Image (cartoon, rainbow, N blue to C red; front, side):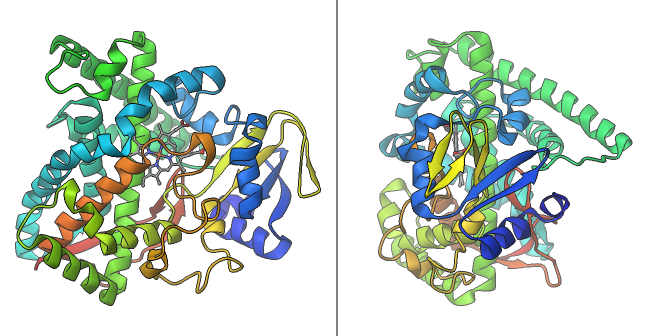
Length: 425
Ligand code: HEM
């Protein structure tokens, strides 16, 4: 288990390459099964979904103390009810109406970058993209402009991530370090819950509910949920909905910088489709290279690198017995780079998406089955438009000598951040 803790990505890859697509090992006092063949993944996430729950998984243990019983953490009938309530706001047609919010917030970020662009000062791009996706999410989904509170909100989200971050608990943690992080976490959680309550109250005071001038998902939920359920759902949507998209964008900008020919194609497309215009949702079908650049970045660096489930009853997969209560994991990191399924798996080749998406349970940045990411269309619309606005105005280059190294926490992030210089195009 020490290997898993030290380098989870190397560990899951090594297990697969050495022992095959169905493996089991003992970790944290229990046997853990890992499945890395599309048909087996489909079996767990879709065909036999009734036998697999998110309850009592490591994700559940990390997320429930903060998010309570929202859409990400609930199960069974409670989950189905919540999913039905939220689904209309995340349909493809619904999320395209957020295009104005997305481009406006991105252009405001470019304005803030202007002095650094002029002086050539490197920017902490990962951090800024996280604030950007947070502002977009709260405005689009909750109908609330966080404004200056957004900065404090972003910092509190960071503190909770740092505490929850490590997927595998350290058996021998430094007590002072843990106490400090816990203190930061508790403060941050209190702050986040306060903000969530304030957001709800302000929307209520503004005549929330369907009667609002432009009703948001929050308005729809205000009529349906009690205060605690509402708070859990607001925090769930905020936490699930911004960091992942920021990571997808961060890795895309990194890979485009490392592959100048691909970046040139993206820029040529943006010039041809947009000229001097700000993009709208109507441009999305024409921004194919932007989209493929993001899809391929999420193949190599899936923001969610592992999903886990607990078997309710015993099961048999491809002749192997999985006992009731077993923890079953699927890693996107392993599947997305599996040499049996991909040509040149380690290379960044956006054109592999030219003929449509790869088989569903082989490429699953958004998961699969009924628990598939509810925000997948929003994430793609958002990432594509943000990329187009940024690449139209700037040339982002990694700071020379800066080390980029993936780190598998709850999400797959660049361990040292991403320092890039933005130059005027
Ligand atoms: C690139 C961006 C994103 C990625 C890679 C991503 C990835 C995922 C994955 C893999 C799951 C399934 C987890 C599992 O099966 O255990 C998931 C679920 C979820 N995601 Fe996303 N996500 C992204 C953006 C978003 C956005 C924008 C929202 C908007 C609020 C969102 C909200 C959720 C929620 C609420 C769930 C739980 C759904 C359920 O269980 O019914 N995600 N996401």
